[in-house]
Image (cartoon, rainbow, N blue to C red; front, side, top):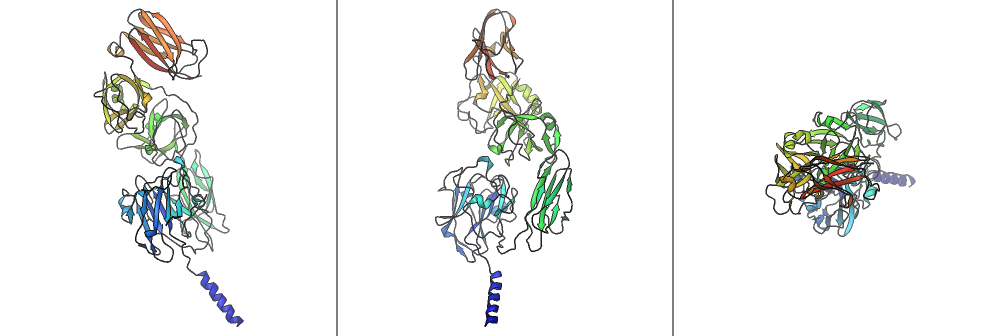
Length: 579
């Protein structure tokens, strides 16, 4: 009897060892957040039985809000055991749509939105944190920053159920996460899911020392795994390592930009997940002019050695315009690599990326790393005063720069400014297209400017045409009256020098004949700071401002306006006091 009982126990134990493990319920097996509308969700059935989908829904919650009543997928049909159900964006590329079971607006998500899988009214799986908006930082997964944006997430084969605590499931590294993070636009596994919950424990994912990053000098990289007796195979050409890849035995010398991948193998363990590190050795360029003169091959990685100033940024494609004393360039950051919050006027050091010439003719800098926090704040770029003819004749030189145009007007101003619209802008030297390229600008929807005015613009290019775009409503600085335009040689406010200045600056103006004149200095709030009243003589006149108000008190650093008034003439310019 004892022998028989022992045999029964052994058989039962053996059967238990090989018993099939099933999923508790349906769960998200893949999440695609690719370029443009390449978005898809994959739902897996590993329950061991067919599942009627009529009781299941997928819902979207955007920007920290509640579940949408319209962006929802009410699935239907029967999902067989071991099969997947794919929901795609209707505008996704053909390879995604070819395997989609349905298209739905529930895929109208970005990396800071939340999708949830429901069985009836019960939430059974979630991607993102409900009613939380992480902003442009999005959510990290498996130690990958901002992984819910511009990445594909695939559930590990060992996961048997959804997780309503997303951050717990996301983990902090490749080993403790439920997800494997793939690069943007990875669709190769969409439409199928590997489910193997009974697989042996995996070897620990290798780690690199020093970690991935940007390096100016050659380094040696060591690779290790915490699994005892593990061997490590690696590649340096970006391919996936396997058991026949190079065996790691000594530190690896890194002298050029390299993608290092490694995988650990150990007896009694499944292979580890692949560890990836990008070591970047950029070509140093001294300033933006040197960068613009470099090869725009889309592969060479450059690093700006100097600090540059942010003159404009917009949400669309996370674009930023930067400028230094030599030139300017557009940063086209589609993947939101530079996701550190910045403000206009911030100085940024160490911007690193590739140089590309867009089809419209614009030279673009595509970042590959986030340079981190601003290295200075409150910087002021004094736009160079040019004419329309000077811009069109020097389009490449002035491209992406913040410039100043005076005494310009529209050919046919009427109605309000509309986004993404072209208007003919004229001065005495020619005509150029003013394009409302910044759709979120505060002047969109406001009345078009009439008559002559001054303006700050950023110079852009669309195919063979040079265009200009104001950044915001405050970039428009109307001329006080037409006398300055009609009789520019009779009275003229020439400007000030030096600018910026500290402790004093000389303001110069020209008079056709002797007459009373006032030079009035205002702060940015429009308050009068200092007034100079004089009987000006014929020819060049000047006043010296020592940075003090009418009471003799020093004023703070900042932007100031100075206006010349004489008779019916009035003209205003800007200057900067920097202490």
